[in-house]
Image (cartoon, rainbow, N blue to C red; front, side, top):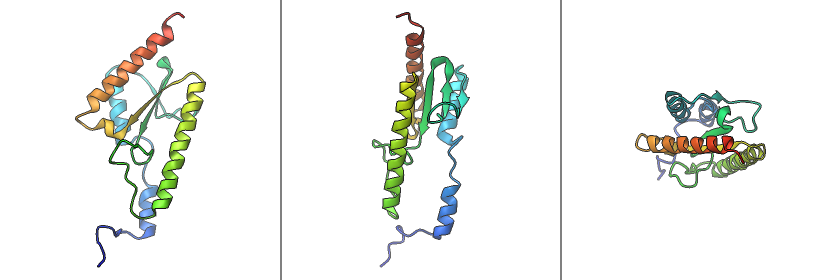
Length: 152
């Protein structure tokens, strides 16, 4: 007997089209972070091409790059949203592995050029955790500002 839960209701062409429409900019988690930062007086730039990895949010004053990562797409190992699909598993494993390697390379390039990196995971932005997450981000930014302007 065929398990209907495992079958895809779309043809491979339809599924491919749907996946190609998944956006990488202005995602819901990113908008939550941007809105919170803006309402709390932080001014930023979006997707700056001249900075390695093209971070989602750049706060030049703090020399900080913020990446808002989707748990599935970037392989968040501490999250239940990071479950591989049951079909085409090898493809997805390879794709997510490449994303993780690329992320690590970009973080290293940024650190080597003096940037501070904050990674916010999609699962940290649920309605019951978003305030704690963003207050932690604010705390990190304040510490970063102190480190920048403290005489050595």
